[in-house]
Length: 218
Image (cartoon, rainbow, N blue to C red):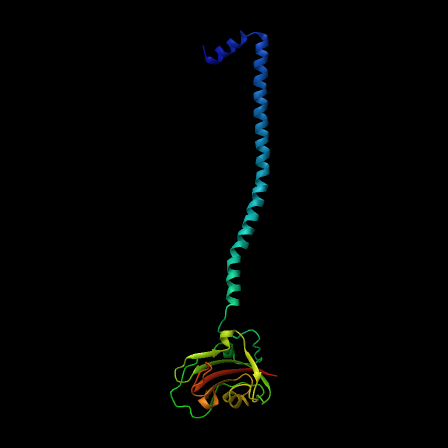
């Protein structure tokens, strides 16, 4: 005799009230299982759209996050001093692209006994006139050693001042009047047209060499 037959036989011998109670319990279990199955089906149907939205949102957020470090790096780079033309340095439309880059300036060997102006780049703009205010980029070094002591590039801004009126050293007043806008010139200046041989105010003594870019006049 199989177990299933034995089970049915044993149930048939139970009182009627007990059989009804067992039937209700079995029906309740089946109903509970059915409800669980329906709930699982509903959750599954809802999960796929929600999961898809979550994946899309996650990808978009990841894309934004991945771009932020580069943006921060670009912001820091733009804020740092550079060797390219400083903000406010408006170059003539036909200016030589080399004026966008800081020149390399070295010292000299020949004695400097008088002012010497050497045109490195010839500009095509109007000539600087005495009394005008000029805008320039420049690098200044000690002639004997090539040691840089001043530069508008390191301040990330061009310099502006009247020329030919005694507002700057004589070597500049005499060497920059007549230079055309858009030019880059090298000025070798003897001590007597600069700050003297032994200045006591911290300025460099002896002969000096400047490379000056004429950006504009007003």
